[in-house]
Image 1 (spheres, rainbow, N blue to C red):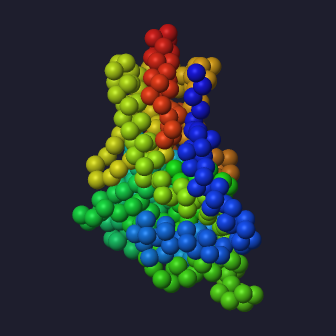
Image 2 (cartoon, rainbow, N blue to C red; image 1 turned 60 degrees about the vertical axis):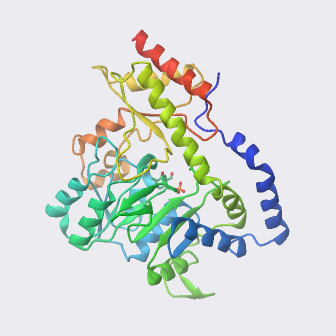
Image 3 (cartoon, rainbow, N blue to C red; image 1 turned 60 degrees about the horizontal axis):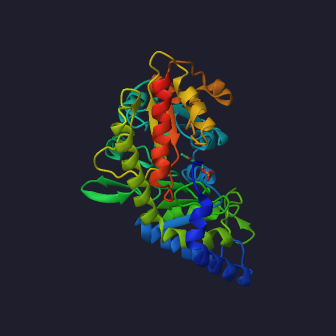
Length: 386
Ligand SMILES: Cc1ncc(COP(=O)(O)O)c(C=O)c1O
């Protein structure tokens, strides 16, 4: 049996007619960049997320870059973020000449630790901190109540990196919010593997702030408010109509797909428990006040005195045609390109330990019970033979 990480072909087959007709109307309109289909998508996303402004851009990476630009962040500024995330979160900060300040994660959820943020602000790092970027990793919200309390206390805006969490929710001040809509700005990715994935690159920025929204719209078209009159130095970061046509169809199915992912996650939980694997593995933790949309179903593999256990398990599963992924094998503070920041090994132990322990199993709405059973049987076989 083959178990791929995700199955976009099967997904397409379930919505083929809708997608094909949506695409053919774009092809016939010959309006390919921004325009009416993109505007419709933006309105639908604003409604779905419950925000005033939803502005599409060319990628999730650009969403973070443009958000930072909209806040005027650049050389000499600092931005607090997590080292346990995709590169773009911190790469965007550094590209603008600002300094990423990496703080450690909560080892149970892999999300940024609010107490570590506070320590960093209280410490020598506090001067010039212009933003905090939490990431809602694997599809579960970071501790937004605590993060927003810190934001308020120190008057530092929050840009949420919700690239992996579109559709997940967090209860804040007694109300349910979609992740990415609690801070000042939210950033999302439509990369094909995301829960809402396009057929190419794409991204989204959300905010309830009118002047920031205006600035973002301007920055995505070379800083021009009126064509050929450039108020700011922006970039070309427009979404095309083909992507929007695909995303408009898929948005209608997103909640159902996220529920399916949740259901599969519970099946994995149960199967792994039933196979007595919990002395070898820690299951993904679901924290209260939020729902997990399982962009990834990520296990913590106990090393049992052998630091290579996770990698050996991955290899064993690969030999049995089961795809797994490691998000992320090297935390950002230890990346070569960030050597100039001066971090060293053991500075951020939770992120470092997680990077040698996590393993994401295949998960997607189309996953079957038989495949899940096969995956868990193989995991069991591995631990019985070691
Ligand atoms: C946490 C996180 N931030 C940012 C991004 C960047 O998104 P994109 O690949 O659309 O540029 C991604 C996507 O891979 C991500 O997972």
